[in-house]
Amino acid sequence: MVKVSGGDQGTISTLGAEPDLGTAFALATTLFGVNHFQFAGNVGYSVETAAPAAAFRTSFRRELPGGAAPQLGVTMRQLEVPVRVNAGKALLTGQGSGFPPLRAVSATLYDRNSPTDGLTLEYGGALDSVAFFDRLNYFSPFARLSYDGGTRGVIQLSFVSGTPPAELLNVGMDNTADLEQDLALLALFPRISVRGGRAHVQRAASYEVGYRVRSGSRTFSAAAFRETVNHAALTLAAPGGLVSGSDLLPDLFTRGWVLNAGTVRRTGYTASLTQHAGENLELTLAFASSGSLTAARTTLERGDAAELRSILRPGRRHSVTARVSGTAPVTGTRFVASYQWASLDSVVPPHVYMTQPLREGVGLNVLVRQPIPALGALPGRLEASAELRNLLAHGYVPLNFSGRKAFLVHTPRSVRGGLSFIF
Image (tube, one colour):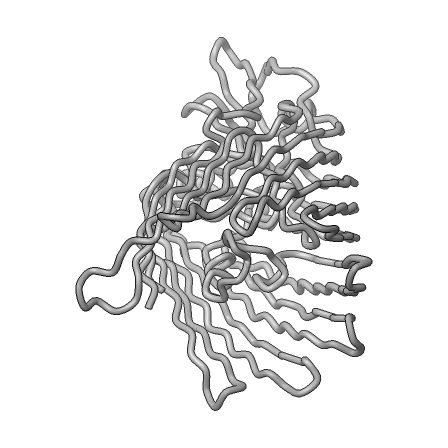
């Protein structure tokens, strides 16, 4: 698969920041029937900062008797640092602007085993090394246990530290595309912030339990989690010169800033009901509640990082999501549209569930994929896509400083489109 895309900035979550780099590709092949090899890449420019970036991933999986499928993956990412960040470096260390770009290397081991009928264990870990200001090395284990009781439903338990592998995420519109799995986390750069003159990587550790059961044409899902986010990185959209201080790092992928909010501990739960209207249409209604951070006041006196951290207070984020997804019977258009009513004073991105297919997206969100008829003797197929996130710009928390406004943003508004060639 080769994909060319363009548009606004990518997504931001507790997993990291995903820029829209422009060109992505993925290649998969099978060797001797049981060995699966995949190679994927994402190259281009971060749209907001015009900084070149690239990421490449190679994975190898071998299917063994009994359901085991060990997989080894290596991912390398590199981002040329914009001039604004060079200025931040000089501010932090008193040095000039010459320093290496952001580099991240990750080696992931993933395995799946079925010890008994209906029971599946997925587990592994990742060794990550990030070079930016400092060299940061850490280990991220993960595991998910699933029990399929047939008509009684599916129960899942998961533990994730750091960034989970793509195999634990329900990605894409149909959740079945293997190539989309490698692309899901390929360009996911770590969220980096600065505090006390040192660089830190945002890391989340979460425990989660989920349940899903289908009865006739309806599916009920519920999940609860407990999560600790260390060095939580908040996005601050502010005009140049409005904020100050060495603990505010210019964002690598937007024209905003990154604030280190320290450690955030939160619990939450979600419940959803999906009505299947035939094979091509699904209607979902979901409620979620989780801990978050809110701004105790919106007027700043100094506008530095210490004052910004002082106004943050623990709070709760409640949301109701209505979602419709399906496939048009004649044109084959696949679509997902959702609208979420939520507490708009939250400044932390929602939790990313490992046991639920529904992703929280504040405001109005639309995703469309349109197959295009083949052109002459050209092999494969073409597909156009459009992705619109938070179109109404909900969740922008305003801050007033010296008569000017800044915003704490956890879900930036973005409009992106792309063309995929699948062969």
